[in-house]
Image (cartoon, rainbow, N blue to C red; front, side, top):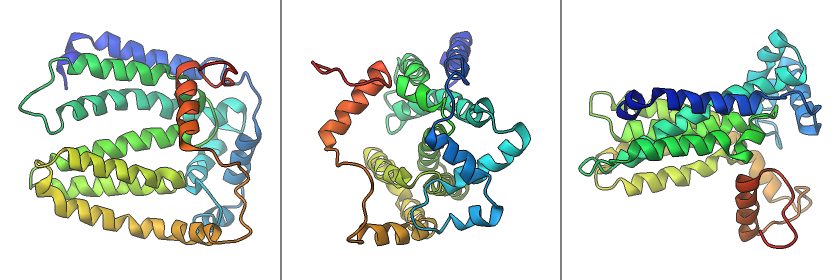
Amino acid sequence: MGEGRRRHPWLLWAIILLAFALRVYHLDFQSLWRDEVDALRFATRPLAQLLDTFTKPGENGPLFFLLLRPWLQVFGQSETALRFPSVLWGTLSVPLTWVLARRLLRFGATATAHAGAAGVSTLAMLLTATAPYLVWYSREGKMYALVVALALGSVLALLWALTAAAAGVRLRWLVYIALTSLGFYLHVMFVLLLPVHAVLFALGWPSTRRHWRGALLALASFVLPYLPLVWWQWRLFTSPTFDPGFSPVSLPRMFAILLVAFGRGMRGVPTIGL
C-alpha cells in the first residue's frame, strides 16, 4: 500500500486538494433548496421528536439529522455551515477510494500481485474527486456524501475482516457490523449494499471460506438494527393507498441517467443522442 504513496505522495495530496477545492468553491453560491431546508428543520426540532424518527414510519436518514444537530449549534445555519460537513465527507471519500481500490486489486490475488495497482488506484481516486455526480452531492446539505464515505468504509471493513488472522478476526467483524449498521440509519437504501458484500465474499472464494461463520453472524446481526425500518417499510409497501410521489422509472432508464450524470454533470439529458 505504501509503494505508490512513497513514489508520488504529492500526486495523492494534489488530488485530495483538488477534490476539496471543487467541493468548497462558491459553496454558498446557490441558496438552500427544499430538501436542505428540511434538513435544517429536522435537525433542529426538539430532541425527543428527533429521536422518535428512528422508529417513525416514512422517516429517512434520522442518524444524519442527529449528527447534524450539534454541528449547526456550533457553526450556525448558513448555507456554508449546513453544506460544509458534506464537503468534508466527500473529500474523505477520495483517499478512501484509493485505499479500497488497492485492497480490491489484492483481494484474493496475493499470488499475482498487480504491478499497476498504484496507477489504477490513483485513477480511481481522481475519478472520485472529479465525478460531477459526487461533487454535486458533496456540495449539498444532505446525507448523500456521508453515505458514500460510509459505504466505502463498510466495504473496506469487510475486506479487512475477510483477510484477518484468527487472533483479530472478532474485532474486525465488529467494526464491519458497526459501520454497516450505521448506514441503515443514514439512508434506507444502504441495505442494498449487502448484496455487493455477498458478491465480494463469493469472488474471494476459496480464501474467504474460513470466514463463513463470521459472515453469517454479521448478516444475522444486521437484522436487529434494520427491524424498525422493515416494519414501517412493509406497512407502506402493503398499503393500498400508498403513493411514493414519483413516477416509475425502468432500470435501463436509471442506468442511462446515471451514465449521463457521472459523465457530464447534473444537467438535462440531451434530446438527441446521449
